[in-house]
Length: 525
Image (tube, rainbow, N blue to C red; front, side, top):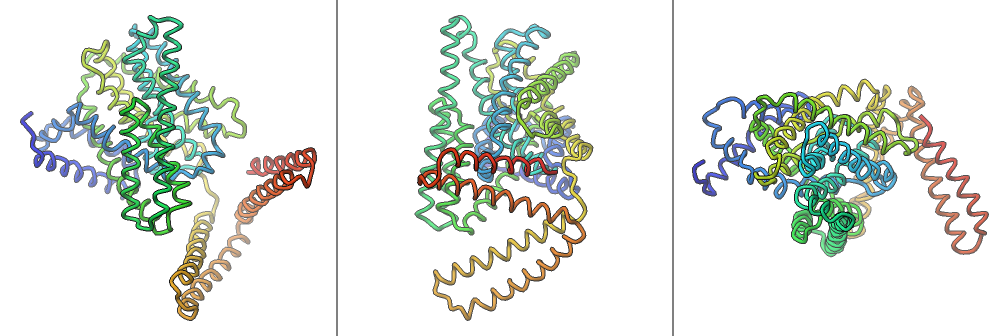
């Protein structure tokens, strides 16, 4: 490949963006998952001889370029964008399935794939467990973007996103240990096990500490400013800074970014962001994530064309089978003891355990002289292609077959009224707040508020009509109110107990009664 100057690199980057944007626009217009469309088109571009695109293909398929773009340039942004919008309260509510999947399922899959490939393929220990690490975690870039495009139940989406954000950090740690330290630890025997466990704990703990400290610090920093362009810059520095700092001290950059973004998006938003700032930060990262995802999946398609499957088809099909079986065992076993978790959701989570750009970037980071490098490259690329195209395309039909996203008649109109009502009520609250801060007269604001209040009355009448036609929708709202009423009762009893107004025994009885009612509400269809 001829020498590339900065001007030429920029030209190639712009061509890549234009192609990615065009494919994404068409896919969205046709209401199809754009990541899959990009992978397919990227693969076709790689296979077909198009002289005008040869410089672009050569540039993108350079291992170092691909690694830099995926891991350093885009991964922090994509992880940060996803974690920024995850409500901590919902993560906390679903912590059991998320932790079971992110840690239990990942480790189970790692062990199953590792020992299976040692036995069936005759791989060496490092080769088998490097491949196992690549295949044991769901790729956050792939999973989140595809599931967002097809749409899933909110709670299910939280579990899927939570798993994909945390378990890839674990997989990266397992990958590095398997590739560079595993044989050393094995040779040391019991002491080696201790070293390996300490390295594992150290990498994850340092990531948590760095992400937590920076997330808290930048959250405090935003409370001193009400300037959304500046606060957007703070978020950029936070995401990339936490990733690079963690990687520099050999901690998990992925975990650092996720934790930092979670704190910034929840605690930081609460103490230091106005509604305008929140809106603009979210809009900025929406655009960034769309651009990054589009380029990433197109690059994955181009990169996949590097593999040569001649005489390797048996190996590829067996590898895909092993990965699918390992994922199934890992998901169903790890969720076995999680109560009130629908079986249909387990099927979606199992089949939605997609592999993607992170797996490819990691395998390309291996030195060429690594034992079994070519075999790992071929089967890893093949599993990723199968996962993104075949599994990705079948997720939406699977959701329909299992009835996971089925909504009753009138639900869309109900949601539209809820959304508009919330908009108008928020507008009234904001007007009243701004009026007091900026000393605007009541005469000037009253007319605008009256217009919003009239809109709310119209929506209220429409909602009553919907409730008459669809009583179940009314029950949904009543269930929400009952839950929050019970949460408030729980806090009230805690306060009485702390102030020694009631005894521990009475408080425990009251808490048990409230908990029973909450469980019954959760079990309602």
